[in-house]
Image (cartoon, rainbow, N blue to C red; front, top):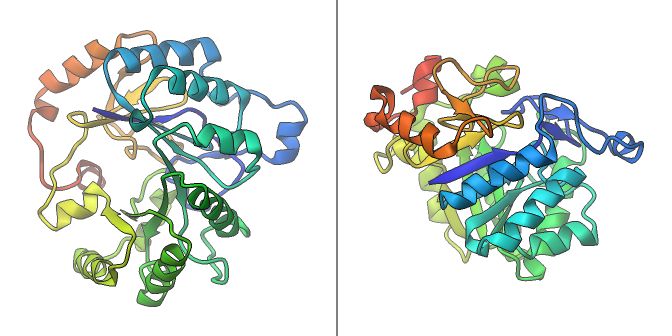
Length: 308
């Protein structure tokens, strides 16, 4: 079992189509003493209780957000995780903002670091704030140079799926010895729910995957399960292989199943931590008719009416 845990809903960036509808926390507000964001988020004690339950149930954790390494409480949670779990059980999704020695040292202790990189900084992208991709590129270069396992995550939408963009990204990643490239399908969730026109036809996704595979090179290329499902190579993993945990402790069957306010889509909420035991939440989900089967298509896109 794999859990994507959004430790916070705060992020230093304010992406137009953020899939979790993250709230922007500026560096200035952080320096002014905003140590713990006040957006339906759990305190440190409750987060530590959840961490204990995840460890007890042997669940691999992807710490995410928002930015998982932006607030003191979240440093403490991840710090505790690296003390209790082997590296291969911990991933961290973060941003290139405030890439301090402290942040770098923490990332040397986890199994994998993920940063979104949709295009090179020479490309104008109206969907990302100015400097977003530049920060990711700088951080990824530093991580790779230090031998830290890191991944560039690219979301596919019309601008990024262009062959020229993908080829230039591939060249840069290979030149800088970034070990992994994760390719994700744009999902109209979170703030992105109002931009369904960014969804590509299934045929184009399949052709794009074939193009990326032909690029080859030393980099490991991995496609998100929703893309592999289009190619008939993967079934829906919701609740059976993966769960999401939101900043207020709500457990969802898929971390992507969020509405425009970043709350669970109807029918995707499984329970709430730490009030309930994770083991009980998982058993209830797996015993329910909704999750006994594994559809070949994406449950979320089917629910939203965008399934293939």
